Image: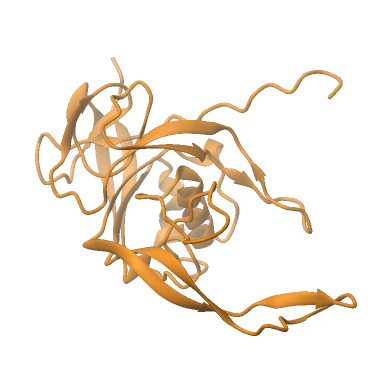
Length: 237
């Protein structure tokens, strides 16, 4: 029998949120419907003031918004000239960015030692980009009781859950431990993403489902994510 978990329920709110799709480099900056797990780890790391890795905690979440639309954004372009970074010769530009408005993130973590990170965040939490500033509504301890099925809100569900939403291939986490180098991605997984503006919860059955003790309904559940393991590196590589 799987034991209940003790965890933290942290509620974030904001004016806007945008989670750049990792496979989109040019054109309209589209956003994933809900934050990837790598973004959630980054959010927790910002609050903790240190890198939070998958081995530090399990996480689950729901992400909601009142609407999603395109935003017109002015950009400042730069160029390297004679080894110096300076404003681009063609000046400023504009771009379209997909944005979720009035977002709410209900985050669940199983590491109770992270309480101080949310009570006294080391830096301003953001729901995506740095301009998508968020604030913390509350932090409370909850029981997470394992169940076989229940109603989930907008989140990321892995296989073998049925594809009832947008299918995304996303990294589990990012490694940014080498100064001056690009970030390395952890393993990629396939996920079914909910729609943040959807108000009706979806009935699912499968592993990792837990009923929070502060849930509004006895049938409400949240998926607590099991981190993927990195692929083995061949010897001599």
